[in-house]
Amino acid sequence: MKKMFICATTALFMTVYLIAQTTPTTNPVSPEVKAGMKDLRKDLRDVKKDQHQLRKEIKEGDQAGARAIRQDIKEDKKDIHSDAASLKNQGVKHPIKRAGHQLRRKHR
Image (cartoon, rainbow, N blue to C red; front, side, top):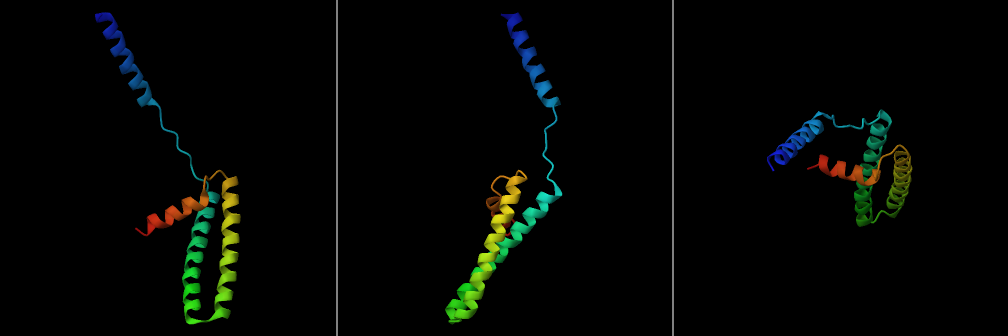
């Protein structure tokens, strides 16, 4: 019984020691991914700002201005989805969702 306890304790300490010696792996983010995420966050901010302007234009009754803003929103959303597709190809999981969370975390 005493030998089994000593062996088990020694094995436990050696396991903990070996796990503590391993260095954690970090995935360095490439500059292209950083630039892509920055562009995606900028596009998301632009869409949100344009949506606020659109509501304001509609409330004021300016349909021509609202139509132009709608077109701008549509172009920004196309840009967002193309950026998201390129980021997915570079290995970023859920880039639009991540960019939205990064924006909300920044404004807290």
